Length: 204
Figure 1 (cartoon, helix red, strand yellow):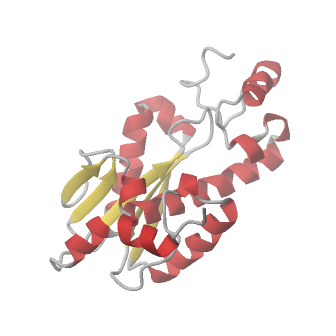
Figure 2 (cartoon, one colour; figure 1 turned 120 degrees about the horizontal axis):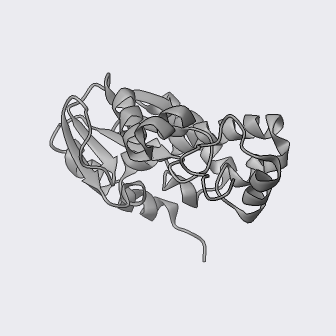
Figure 3 (spheres, helix red, strand yellow; figure 1 turned 90 degrees about the vertical axis):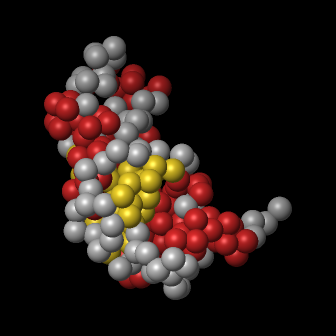
């Protein structure tokens, strides 16, 4: 059954439209890469306008790579504000994955022209305004979904570059997640400089 993308757009933008109707500016924040064994976490903050609503915006994990790449450009062209910040593997190891993610989110949001921040599953963040954590936000909120696309495309591009540098780990395919092939390569070749030491103790 073919997906009705217009209906999906109305569904995912309902929360956003309710806030726009009050006249309040707000941002969506999301991250990509909390779970992988290596590479950075990418955190994105985006302030989207009420019009135009971009067709196909959805949870980035549900979209094809080709569609994500196209939407990435459309979001950057349309957004009133957009910023992506990376948290390095070193920072993740130093402060833990949750804190590193929050730090990157806060940096991405610090210059946003608003005082309300809708965040995927996180409700405490050092940002200049009110924070509303929304469970599964990237699936139910248009602005958070747009942020999820910026974060995932940014991180996937980085992991493609790392695949050229470290081809034996299969980063092009696994994007750093702990697949059987990735773990086998980790045990055979050892960790690279981009591996998170706090994540791989049981594999090396």
